[in-house]
Image (tube, rainbow, N blue to C red):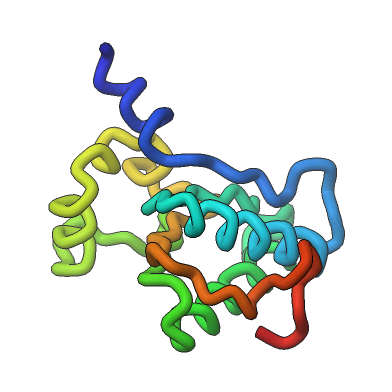
Length: 139
């Protein structure tokens, strides 16, 4: 197996900007998928949120990162890494690559793609985040 194929099999990708949904719908879809994948024990999720057309970050990205920060503070996800903020010299990056060495092959991570965020999921995502397939507000 070619090493580049390992990433595709190892890390799932979710494009929350597909079909240009409103930001709240995109973020709700992200939350549903985070819970679903955590229940199956998936450790990583790559979110494609885009970067916006004005070069300062789009609404979907801003809302997704705000929600991920809240989930991390609430201990519902282990961590998240906007690709453009990863610095290969930091301890955070080194720990991430040590735990998930396959990530070093990911082109979005290598190129610091500002439209991508990597989420490190917890094994057991708290169920009250999403209930009955519909996001609860607020999380």
